[in-house]
Amino acid sequence: MNAQLQPTGSAYFIAKETEKPENHTLSVLVDNEPGVLARVIGLFSGRGYNIESLTVSETEHEKHLSRITIVTRGTPHVLEQIKHQLERIVPVHRVVDLTVRSHESGQERPLERELALVKVAGTGEARVEALRLADAFRASVIDANTEHFIFEITGKGTKIDQFIAIMKPLGLIEICRTGVAALNRGPQAM
Image 1 (cartoon, rainbow, N blue to C red):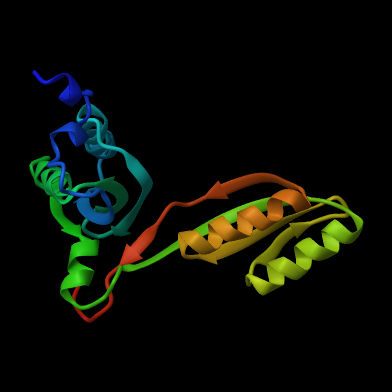
Image 2: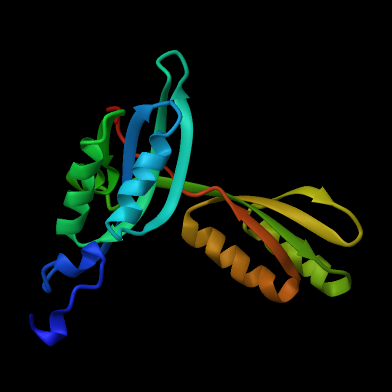
């Protein structure tokens, strides 16, 4: 084997050199039963795929169905492999690449949002500036005392990244993010 093309243990090795990695958002409809999430995650870890974001929740209580939203990165070839492998897992009902679906409907990306809780400690000018910037980002104060704030912010991941970056010098202490929730625009369902 060529010394420059040694396998890395990752599925990304098999990608064609001309393909560039892309971020895609996948929506997976599954039975809401024990072990399903472990099987889906096992598929990713067992093949060396990375998960950038993962969100899971029951969405159809009467049918006992959950929706798993996964943001992953890979070449088009690798992303297609991921989708086909997910479809073969027994309790998976449907897999939709929301990124591809949005491109097909003339949109750049699916509608994606995250929620974050951001704890900031500070007094004096730093405290005033944190409140002013939180207002500019439309973040809500959900807990406060004389020593700290906890802000709740929703929006695109880039907005949350920016908010976190500007809070660092003002006394950022802790962050908790939900991961991406996503839907495609338009009247059709998943």
